Length: 144
Image (cartoon, rainbow, N blue to C red; front, side, top):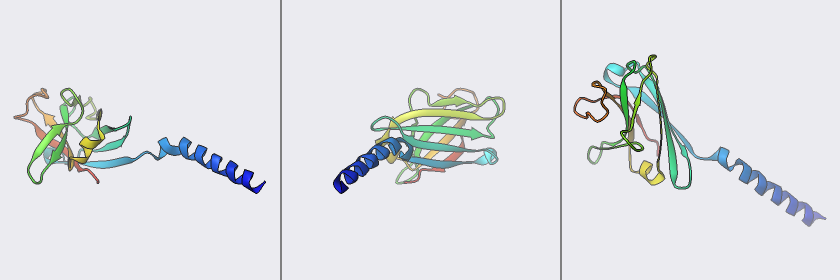
């Protein structure tokens, strides 16, 4: 009788653990702070588990230039400055008429581990491929 109750309790424990696993998935929240003329801008990047070996990165920002074009970047400052776009394509999103922007991308989990920061760049000409005139609007350190 005691053994049967123990087995039942263990089975219930495993069922509960499996059902709660998605809710307990790792999630990292990174505050994004405005830089330069965007000092009043703010945002948050959320990195969470997606499919096996993947992370989903969601960026929400406010205080941006209305209808401005922005790109999302992984950045390292040390040992040397390096950067790579987050996701695929041109890594861009457009702020709305309230100065709010949203971007979501999936990347390899191993990719996130390589970087120190996330930066959001503003492209004044409206072309995300124009890297010469881009300015960093928001930045935040990736917590390890």
